[in-house]
Structure formats: C-alpha cells, structure tokens
Image (cartoon, rainbow, N blue to C red; front, top):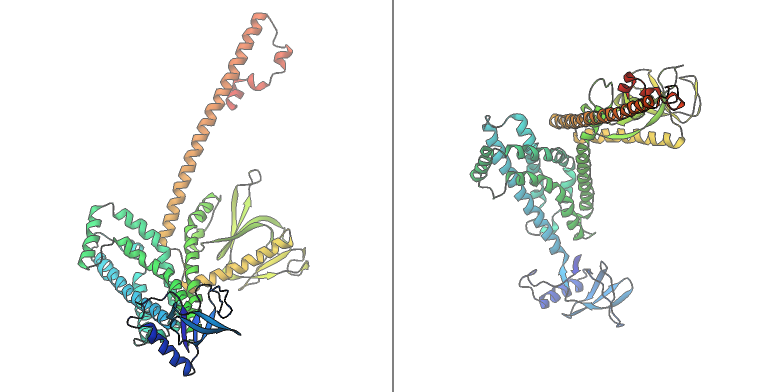
Length: 507
C-alpha cells in the first residue's frame, strides 16, 4: 500500500521529480490495484458540489491522479475533486525521521566517547587534583551510559535499512532495551550535584586551564565541560519527541507501527519516572530538616533508607494484646513508618517514639467488631503483621475515609519501593552529606534568630519593668509629700508585682 500525505509541495523534497512524473507513478499504482491514500493536513472547505471537503487528519483514497492539479478522491461514501499541489510521500517523511534518529545516535556515541576519554580518563591521571568522590560526583555513571548506548546503537544499525529507510523497524530495539534506559535516572539525579561541584572547582584557575586543555587535546567542539555533561539529560528527554514524530509518519498498516507506539509509551514512562525521582531528591533537604525538628531522635537517619514522605496523620495505636490504646502521629515514608508524640502544651513539638520497618510487615484490613488477636472492639481499623513472627500492630482511624486513605498510602509505599528496586534508585552519600549541611545551616540560622529574639524580649521586659518601677517610686514620693498612708486603696489594690524588686526581675 502506498501512503501519501497532503502538504505544501516542496520541489527540494523529491529532487528531479516533476509533477508529471508523479502523476504517472501514481496512475500506475492505482491501475495496478494498489491503494493510494493521501492524508489531509489542513481543512479543505468548498462550496462546489463536485469538490471533496475534508478536515485536517482525514485520509483520502486517491482514485484518479491523471490531472496534475486536481485529483479525484473518496472519503467514506463521498467522492470529489481535491487539490493535488499539496502532496508529498509519507514514506519519505518516515525515512527522514529514521535518518535523523540514526544520525543523532551516532553523533551522541561520539559525544559520550569524548567525555569518557577526553575528560574522565585525563582526570583520573591527575590524582593531585581529583579524588574518587569528586570524579563520582562530576561524571556520575557516564561510563555505564556509554556502554549501554554502544549496544543500543549496534542493534539499531542491524534494523536500519540503508536502501529503503522507511522500511526500517526500529521500534523493537527500544522495547528490548527499555530496562537499560533506567540508568539515566542515576545520572539525571546526580547532575545538579555535578554542576555544584564543577562550579566550586572552576573558581580555581588551574581547573579552568586543565579542562580546556582536555577539550583541545580531544579535538572537541568549543563548549564548556558542563555543556557536555548536560547532553545525556537532554538526550533521554528527546527520545519521546523523536518516537512521537516517527509514529506520526508511520501508517497503521506498517509492520513497525505497533512497536513504535509501544516504544513511545515506554520512553514517556521512563522520562516521567526520571523526573519524579529528581523531584524526590530535591525534597531530601526538607526531610532532613523535619527529622532535625523532632526531639529525642534515636537510631538511623530517615535518609539512610527513605526519600519520600507519602502520608501522615494521627491514629490510635495498640501494639500488644490487652494493651492500652495510645494516640500517636504517624509519618509514612518509603520503607518505614515513624511514630511521634505531640507535646502536651506545645502541640507543634514532636517527640520520637519509634519506627516500624515496612519491609518486614504486611498490611491487613480489620473488620469492625471484636478483634480476636487483641480481644478488643475495633472500628475503622487495620493491622501491620510481621512476616517472620506473630507480632501485630493495630491502628484505629477516626473515620472510614481516613482508614481508606491510609490503606491507599501503604499500597503506594510498596509500589514505590518496588519501582525503586527495579531501577536501582538510592540517595548517594554525597547527597546525604549535602542535606545534612543544609540542616546544620538552617538550624544555626534558627538558633541565631532565637537568640536575637530572646535578647530583644529580655531588653523590652527589663525596660517595661524599669518603667513600672519608676512610676511606683514616683507615686510613693507623691504619697509621702501628701502625707497619704500606703494603706490607701490607691496603693493597697496595686499588684504586688511592682512592690517587690525580686518579682520585678521576673517581669
């Protein structure tokens, strides 16, 4: 089946091919029994009875192409004339997209090779300038990406039809390598830290000269190193755009159509998940700050295992048979559930009371009524049951809707953990240290602000006390001059706060 697309005719698109030759070719295809279709790009509005009206995206079956300006076509049961001066071959459009994909992949491979050999290899030789941690932060897993892309492009080349590019079937290549694209997640998540580390190094002129010498030695284009390191981030985001363009110019009858459609869905999911992981890493500072605000913290830091706060709320909690119900505030992170208690006076202050390892527990719904395990009546309850022992925790929500939200949150937590394990997502030690530094900085600023507030409060308190003390002294002198006894109601009813120097200091 030959597929054509209605569009502005470009003589450079088919060099040397005149409209007459086009018509002859089409007529041979039609007379030979081939179905020739044209796809409308714009609406064709007409008042003439014998002209065929259509909208952008409609597929027109070409029945007669003997006239160079007007063709006879059919849409459903309607037939009529339509302009032929807007036609170009959809197969050629698909070939152009295929060629563009192959060209960019080959160029990208060279780009990765330049980074690994031109920069990373030279940096490893200069142990006096770089340590292993710095190189890990700056370059991430760029070598893993290079090896993966080499294998991916090798398979693309096998599927590439050099004689007829539009017949190439590259969709299956993306599906076969879909799991490999997850390595970009680690690189993208690390990219911001790489930029920060490079920025610090570039303040030293030695590093500026060193990186420039590496670029010249490798004969790389005139772009700074941070520009080269940005390319993998841009590349993974470009795949869905390229596949969407390829799908646009792939007929549904083409053998590659369903594979390209599936590959597009896969790559969109990959980029979406990578962006989600990046968002989570940007929030780790907030998690570290939250932990620093909790009093009496014990054990490992939250960031040692978790990176996302999924849900939080107050629940009644019973952790042993015949035990007393306790009101606690629960914070559900990936891998763990943290228990806190509110301060009796200041309800915004939290005290650490323990945690539950979610990897060791199953979540089970509990039916309203008397519970056999705890021998108590429960309502809006659910349980956490240890997989390796008989330990059970029971939780009671105030409303059925709240219980449902908690059950959904636990389901989301398990799903997130499984996805993280699939792609190997974790917070690096460098990122943990950066978060800890941020917390210390914020805590120090809050401490200084608190001290300033205390000094100012003490100053104003002393000032107010001094004013009242002076006023009382003035009244006492006035009383003495007027010969009024201190038992006068004017003085006997005054607060004792201003009658004692010791109490004034408390004021």
